Length: 394
Ligand code: FEO
Image 1 (cartoon, rainbow, N blue to C red):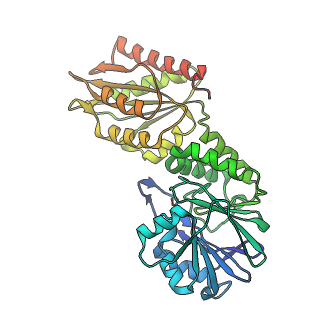
Image 2: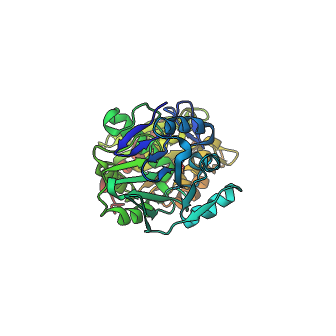
Image 3: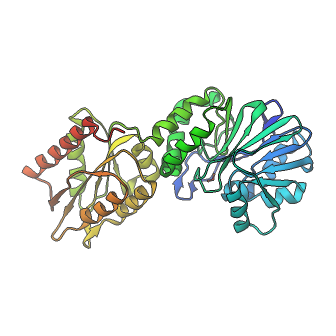
């Protein structure tokens, strides 16, 4: 297995995980990569490592360029174990010093007992041979410890989770892969990993916007070299909660009544000229639904009542949605109930905590038939009009 040169004296030496299908609850049908980078020079530098089972793959790629024992410095941009769990092996193999942010030093000590790690400051620059490394703390992208490292002379920003995608590929660059796949996997990654941290991304952007960035070297998936500003613009749009005229309806059903409501509401929304996507939660992957939620202006959630509460699959989805704190959305809730109801009320409490602007609910006893079908369509039309009004414009 060979390294891939990404710039003069800079090589990708990561690992490809073709088979991972669940990344802490996020479905990854296209696998992923754990990207590590080697910078060669007077002192050879390793930027991040890979998930421990892939350590040998990383070493083999390094060996295609230099003797791995000749690494003199390791930079740990992020403590999460998909990037740090090989650090102990790497330090034992090389004897190299490890550099991390202040929170990184703390975080690594809470994971491992045998690392020798030195702290670097936010904004600090170090000279290594004829190269300059600048460290930029980026808390919560995606953990408190996270930092970017900028290789000044090459214009390469090592962005760990930022701008990543779960996409296994033998291609390394954005101009070598299907752009529609890359766009989708980038959005999916942001929606399911980084969505709660939009305001932190905006602060990070202020720190890096003046840098002469040529390459965004991510820790997952493809490296951005053709036009890094394009993915940065998408991140700014997502972080600002920008949406389009689009609704996502996510529901589950017990005897088909809530499903019929969902379909009628969808017709009502679509009749206002709004792009409308419908998902039965138990037949869908929640990370796929969240990808559609990312740029939707309305999230409409339906649940039948079971034992005076929401259907378990819908409750699960609501917990996931709430944790990701979507910005700039309106939310409608609906459902069929038999006698006492309770699903919509319980969901409303959660949706309000998620920070969405709540619309009126729509509940129907048992089966939506006769005049009740019209009620569902009209509810959808109301949502469509509210989407067009764009009252959440930021
Ligand atoms: Fe890829 Fe937050 O780790």
